[in-house]
Length: 400
Picture (tube, rainbow, N blue to C red):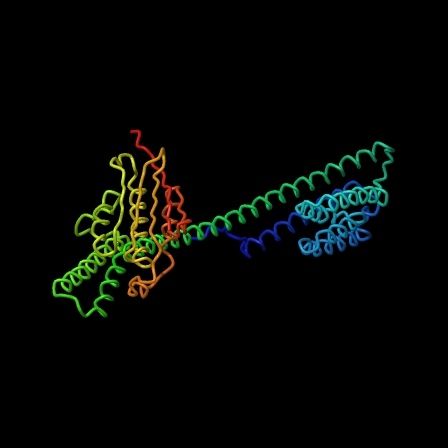
């Protein structure tokens, strides 16, 4: 939906020109009739200067059509015509009003001064035969100044309104662009969220499947029990990966479709002991510490903490298989502190895990998760050459 204001149609533009020309013709005719009625010199006997005045007035009406293209030039010429032609005075008023709409003080003041001078020149060239002295000149100056001020005021008001409409058009265009940008950003954010969830869910399970299936390809001395155990691990993790993938992709289902059953709860910190216990027999020993009381920790923070730990376990499996790992989660003040530390891989580490693909986005996604809830995450080697991941997540209390 476009928010732009409608423009001026050609029909409306033509009508605007017609009624302005009509007003100029009527006003010029009234001024000419007033000069003839007052017996002004040059207008007493029809056929002398009246024809010249009308001709100059017609030329002024024609030149009035170019007032928008050359506002200053047209206004100067028509104002000069008004010094010898009363019919063109109406056209010069419209030209001065049009010039004032551009709101340029110097050009407007120049034409205003020219209009006052033109008024005095017309009184000098065409006296009405009554010598009223200084009073007549003062009256002419006051009436001329009021007429010029009225034209400038009308033009200035029209220019201010046009400027307001132009600003509104600009603001609406900017608002429309920002709306499109917000929609696009929302789409990108949603895609990133789905990609992050899929990475966190699948990387852990698929790495287990890849490790055990890789071991089966080069170890030929496995007993039947070990072979069945590895096959069961591969099967269980494959089924778990598919199940969790369906849960993640559930956000893309048709919102009008009726669900077949309640959505499965997302894993939180309370599910970490079960996750760690299932990995110690295959990935290596894990020293795990978790607060006994998790009351007040929001579900979003708890779920993100779970995913961060899950990513740390996956990275240990990929880059340091079999190495001992410690996971310490403590509650300090208004923060949840999470520290994961594992030794770096040795030369004798199993070569199978080195074949696992590395997306390079695991820690990036974990950092985004921490920042999403207002926390932070850092990672790197310490002085003991251990790889350490530290995260701080807020622990808002529910005061209700």
